[in-house]
Length: 149
Image (cartoon, rainbow, N blue to C red; front, side, top):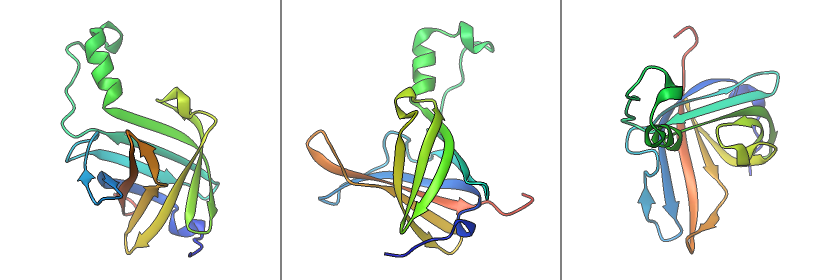
């Protein structure tokens, strides 16, 4: 296990890929598709925010989102996730303490991510979780956004 200092995480990161894998080696890019977009920001003050969008999202049929049909709102919600709060580092993990989220169930929870740093990229992985009878792990690869870009 390796301990990380926050200065290696501080900054803004752009999502490169998001995938789901099983213990058996199956890999899947659902639900965010093959070309997801997103940003992850860590500050020196210990705050973080994350936004992830499905690749190829459709625009709403109206400019005022509140007037969009329920099906379009549901699709927009189902293809975008965002949350923010404080973060702490513990050994090889970053813990996101969720204070606000597009998924209300996450508010007040801690999202634990295993951290690997490779040059200008960080790889965050969830702890293995049983879903539909399979042990699965999410892996998100983020690339540092250069300053002043």
